[in-house]
Length: 499
Image 1 (cartoon, rainbow, N blue to C red):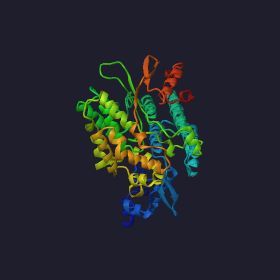
Image 2: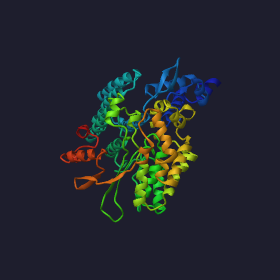
Image 3: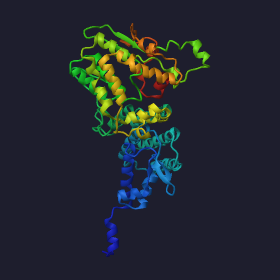
Image 4: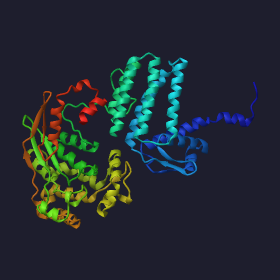
């Protein structure tokens, strides 16, 4: 046995450079995808060297790999920063690709012939050429998916697994459709991957969710359920039911919380529509709480102002807010708990702060420039002139005061007095035709639902001026097709449903 010098032995005791690079790569990638590193954030090589206690070369190799994947941008001499990408789209695509690649790795050992290896090598060369182009777009992702399909087809054919080929084709077809729509529906893809695993690796899938993949399990309950777009709203809807409230109470409590914790999608300045059945009744009740235009906003007046159309961000697109009137009318007619109790959680979140969730921040970022264009919205929604980070506490004390006024005085605490006067003054400042009388006269109304029967189920909607009737028309058209014969995200079904 040859003897080694002390320096050589010391080098042997250090982790290989590839191991150091992989550790840096894995850590950086995880921090980018979970939002700890923000889009546009600079990545200092020196700081990363200190953080990972490694040299410059493995840091650069890790950054180069992330750059090829579209997660960072830059070059060694000019520096790197986190790319401005669609976080959800990239995360979802990576989950699907990594899931399929893991399955392929388990099968690759069975690819034994030289011709199979030559085919794989050719496809991999194309993938490397695509990666070296340093571009990321729906088109390049689609091309990678096409090449990935070839890789998996080679493996499937080499192992003689016909069903695997069909499933891989279907999964990649769904991926291409999703990219074409610029929508990534990860739950459906996971189902396809799960079926893939169940056929290729018996005993791994067993027809149930694979808990190694991210996702949510089905919810089961005995006495009541609530479904909203935000966990805090759902939580307080359930607590309202537990406190003896009914569905109307729970819906009002959840809506009030959403008006605080999801400011990018709803608020007390909006409308409200409701469909429900009172306990023990089969009668479906519909309420239209949409606001009207100001009385002065006649066609003649708007034309006289030189308007040929009304932009979405125009002051003339602002109708009278109907949500608060709807809450109070529905509660008076069908509620059970005290109205002030229903608004208490929302008031506390507005006054004492609420954590900003990832999805909320994602949408908030898209509205940042619009919020920055007006000082009142900038002051409330861009504290320190930036969108709050995920997990930051956001406060809206003035909204808390308004909600408290509504809790104490009902609808009059919103449509009369100082709140209505402040809203009118702001709208007039921007050229609006709104008056305090318009606010005082806001009234929603109970309406007769419009309905249709779809494959044995009665479907109800609030009639126009809502879009609900559109869904009924779509169902009537689709009833003439055998959708059960088409995979949920197959090109044929998506094409049909889009048309």
